[in-house]
Length: 441
Picture (cartoon, rainbow, N blue to C red):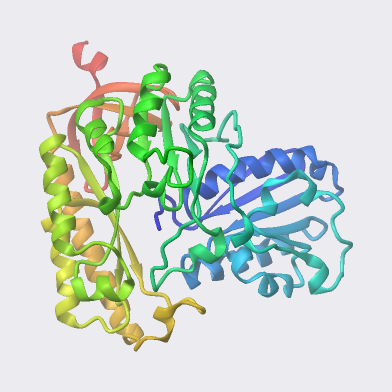
């Protein structure tokens, strides 16, 4: 469970077609595939156009936001055809099919095929005709969809893996994505070559459970081998970044690449979820708190200055105050900088939804405390960087990201360009950077 973005990102991506994307980096990548397939199916020629919602099911709030956005889209586009897909559509198709605003519901496998967008049902059909969602667990392979660009973004995402074989007690995602399956290494390398050749300076490898990559491929290559192969075979890649990883599955080749490959970015986002051993066991996680702390310590020795982010859930069922304080402390003990805090949200169909729940007001208060701890850690990080030299990838005019994924304000460069800069200060939310050329002048 990882998130770069909060809420939804919407962009007109073709004549008459809008895509609204919720959730993770993998959804961002898949939305671009959907755009291409919908265009090839002729969706853009429909009178009134089409709006496609690529939903997220991580939390009940994500589902609520998607439904709210769908209703708004219908009010603003009364003649448009509205299609809903993504993880929430996969896990609860009939709830979306029952919405009067929705014309078609597609599953996570169906959304990537042009045929799914052809022969849309007529307006006013019944709920059963609206939903085209197959059993996601019947899917055995993940294709390496070729994408030439990611609309409006300075970096490009490449899918290397989908699905998850683990069954964390809080997580609905395996039921939206299916079992773990990997994109063949050759297909990943070709996709990276294509994007690097199209001018993307930074490529982000993404997946649902990315450190499980390769278990289903011939020879069972691991993520570290994939990373090394990309860096060796695609010299045009200036920056390679990993999305969320499970530290307990980090292999030796991956650790070696972190230590020796400067083009592999010094930023890891960890799927921690809790800092308490009993809660981790009740979550059915595969690591303990001391293993997380030791992993961060060991990787810092390999790559001094590496930046860690993490997902942490506040208020998991049965969590006592003492258990929560263990999560609060692990922010400092792991030296986390970019914290994604999730107030526990019971998802129907998961074991955690049947466990004794923590009162909602307590969950919210603990989430607020964790966010405060994360904000304090981030400010400490910002304070440590003035006077250092940083390479900044410009995302949009005046803003970019360092190699450690820290936001920086800089008056230089164009989106997609990497600018060498000196950090002159910070404003509490972002670094203030001056390009080296300006310094020399």
